Every structure is written in C-alpha cells, then in structure tokens.
Image 1 (cartoon, helix red, strand yellow):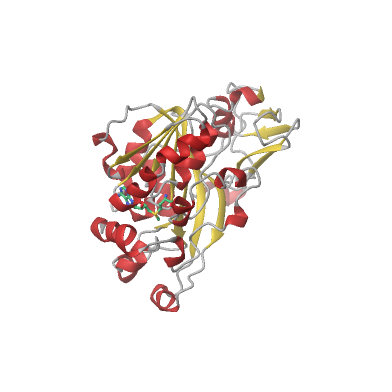
Image 2 (cartoon, protein in one colour):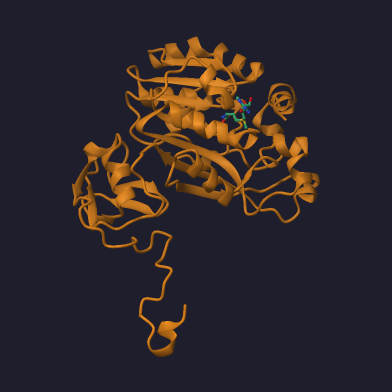
Length: 346
Ligand SMILES: C[S@@+](CC[C@H](N)C(=O)[O-])C[C@H]1O[C@@H](n2cnc3c(N)ncnc32)[C@H](O)[C@@H]1O
C-alpha cells in the first residue's frame, strides 16, 4: 500500500479539489486566532493541503515540533510562526513531489517570517529511528491525516513515544470509523488513498495508543465525514467515518482510568489567545479563575507539562476517593450490599 499511497499523493492528486470526501478541513472551522497565520503561507503550499483537521495546540513558543506526513508543508509553516525564532519545526514525508513543494518555498517563508526555523526530511513514519532525530527531543509531535495511511500503526506509535520528551504530547487529527472495515474497503487503493480504507475503528485506536505507552488518550474534537463521490459511497456502505483530533501525553504515571484524588486546578487565563478558558479536551473546558475539580490524570497533564505555569494546583495524590465521576467510567458493582440468600450467591 505504501507505493500506491505515494503514487496517489505524488502523482494523482494535484490539489485539495481533487479529493473525493470532505476529509479536508473546512477553513471556517479554523479558530479566528489562527486565520492570520494561514494568510502568511504560500498559495501553492495551501493548494496542496490534504489534512483533515487542525494540529496547532496552544502554547508552542520556543517548542521543538515534528510533523509526521507533512505533505507540502502547510502545517509546518503555520507551526513555524507559533514556535517562533527560538523554536524549530521538522516535517517528515515519504513522497518526493510533496516535499519538493514544501522545500521550494522555504526561503520565501523565511523572508516573510524573518527567521528560518523549519527543516524537511524524507522518510517513513514507521521507521523514525532511522532518521537523524534524537530520542526524547520533541515537545510536541503532530500529524494531520496520515496515521490512517500507515500499514504499521503500532511502529508509528512506538517511534512517536521514543521521540517525545517526558511531558511532551502527540496532538493529531485523523480519520476513524464506527466499526472495523471489511477487507473489500481495506484493500481498495482509492479508498485507502482517500484516508478511508486504512482508518481505524475508534476502539482499536484506543488499544493501539495504550500499547504504544499512551495510557489516557484525550479526544479534543470530532466531526462526521461526508463522502461526496457516489461511487465511493456505494463501496463504503454503512460505514460511518469521522475526523477527530486526539492528544496523547507521554507521562509514565498516567493511569488507564480517571481516578479521583480530590484535586482541582485554577486556570489563570494567561496562555496566549486563551484569556477566557483552556480546552484540554472535549470534556475539560476549564474556565479562567474558577476552581475546576480534576482526576489524577488531568492534574498530571497540566502539572507535568508545558502548561504548568498557567495553573494553580490544589491537592496531591495521598488520598484516593475512587473512580472520578463522569470521566467515562463508572463503578461496575452495585453500590448496596446484597442481603439474605443472595449474599451467599457467588
Ligand atoms: C493526506 S496527506 C496529508 C498531508 C499533510 N499532513 C497535510 O495536511 O496536507 C498524507 C501525507 O502523508 C504522507 N505519508 C503517507 N504515509 C506515509 C508514511 N508511511 N511515511 C511517511 N509519509 C507518509 C503522504 O506522502 C502524504 O504527503
């Protein structure tokens, strides 16, 4: 499949308009604070954007960022402006034609931004250890509509975990399905190239993330994908596709469930562009200056990462109060003890 994906993105597609689904991110969904950054990007780079979401988490100034499957470099050049002159963004892609567009405009962007802080490397995301990239050296790794295309997603996850600093995060958009796709869909080269055939059933993705060392994946946003081509629609049948952004923190101490230690945080409203609140994920929209109760994992995602200076932390891990209510997991046992004969029943 790697050859056919290379052919699809290198030769068959010439611009975003050639795609047959709405997987490509609608510009109206881009937050207002990001729109000015996109106007600074070269039109040819923008015209070959094939991503399915947004991969610009907040608070990136000075960060070292890696973009997996960077394509023609739209996200690299957006992120370059966010990390600034003291940061660095490296894009990896396997397709020469995509990298050629990205590199052709590097000097143009350097002149516009006033600094040159990007680098593009040819390589496979399953073999990140073969590239000249130091383990534990990235604050953030991003990827936009690429993991679904990989034939060895477990190797990709392991490589990402190895390259992230402790407390770093993998923040990425990709395509998911509501169930496992049949073989006819998985082996269809056009569906595969369109980021549908290789898309993961969401629960298999969670298992994959756990296996890669990311104990508590957090869903940031999602939207259903529309297949606008009738021929493709006939081949996918009842499968429902979604574009979703997840964030996965490299924190060894994370638990597989949200445990309650009676902790809370207060967001100071000090992260650039986020004066009113901080959205950690779809279930944690933390309002500025308000005491916000959190589970142990959320506490660590804020306390042991680049976000720490922007919060006050209340509590510690000395006392455990059971599972955190409303975090997607409930106590599986009846809350009242059974009486009489039933109590003896196994
Ligand atoms: C759907 S496009 C997304 C490109 C880019 N992220 C964007 O938003 O425009 C997928 C890109 O991933 C690259 N790609 C796919 N599989 C890859 C792999 N196994 N290793 C490296 N690059 C890969 C393709 O060459 C292509 O440029």
